[in-house]
Image 1 (cartoon, rainbow, N blue to C red):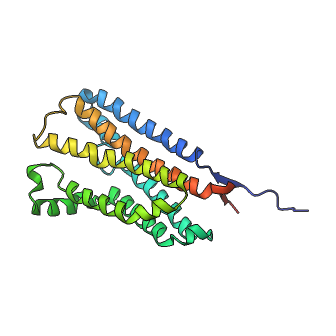
Image 2 (cartoon, rainbow, N blue to C red):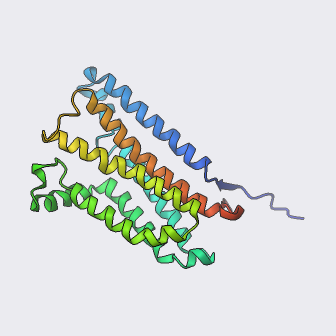
Image 3 (tube, rainbow, N blue to C red):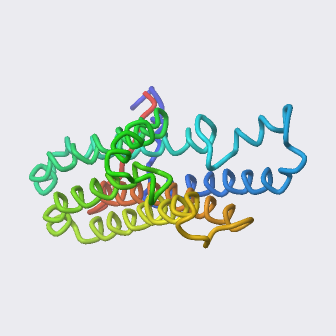
Length: 238
């Protein structure tokens, strides 16, 4: 008879965890919209500090921290998959490691602004500032194309359910991080005039929401891969 009592375990469900994270996205976005609605009364003092804390277009605040953490979570899951003993995962171990590295880099990027710091220099070399406000978009597009090319054989050969979920996650994330970002950048330099007035608020909200939801969908894809064949991740507290 076991006198130690039952283990306390946390089961990482492929649907429950993403739903919880999506709930946090809803809270963050709603807080931002409320603060923006009160913008006229939040110009200074504690109220202004609250506005900066929830600003989806800001840095070093709650939305940035949340984005950094979910990317870090995705990296941890991919690292675990790279050490799996399942044969079809061992075959693609380097690709899983690559996903982990990319995810951790994007987590650091959210905190350290690598794309803005280095993008300004690289974009300036090709005169990007004449077309887009954010110079990093040019090499961002190049990196997306390179990663897609490298991972195409991987996506064609892994489990179809996992692959389709990863592709959907990528489409959602890139639609926000590059698609809407390009639209906003072109508007900032006057190349187009599609976003003006309150439409700018809509653009920022959609852009950042799509980015966060894209990462959450990616986490869902990784958890789904873990649970194929009835397997699940369980973390014991002792």
